[in-house]
Length: 294
Image (cartoon, rainbow, N blue to C red; front, side, top):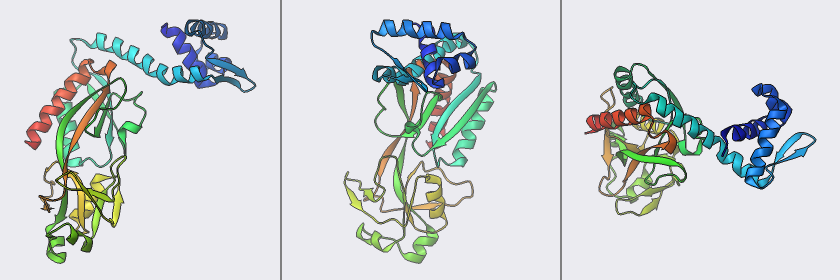
């Protein structure tokens, strides 16, 4: 496929007309039209239809537009990877992360990367569900999950954390320590709402689930953890077992009965996987996490 033709098609789709695309890109309208017509000839089916408002995608055109931008990004990434071979990682590395990662872990990771690769800048974006975001403008997505997402992605497990019941010592001294799952019904329960999961069904160590009525449901793990530290209830949250810098500690509740292991994964577009700055930073972060978490 001719990338110039594909880019012309995408520009026209984004701007809604040949005239608008020509003004934005500085490319003559006749050139854009010729490239799009050539792309349609190659595909053998109409991709655009004219309307009073401009152009409208056909079903085939919509399919190409959905995948075409990623193809252009992949081609650009491939050229970048060639240019960066043998060089120290530099430029901007764009990451999307799940909401609620502990700042006392994220700050040392950032400091470690910057001290090792001073020419590299990081851009962090946070999402309740990182994989639901458009990954076209992202180099690395960090998320929870055992399975890799479908599509042209490379996905690796960088660490595993325990999802466990936690409570502060003060809360347990005040309300008592539950001795069974049934005892939880008499407590204030705080639950992290994981993407695509029911936060009102908690996991057992034998692979089952049981219903609960949480007083708090939140997509932010850090918020739930801090409510737990404040003595507001018993929380079910993923925990890397890294102590808070304040010295505050959470006590594990019903460790033999409730909880499970969760994988933390990094997912990158396949075309970016061989770019030195992506490979080197991922290797660095995995080594750092092994040292911190043991």
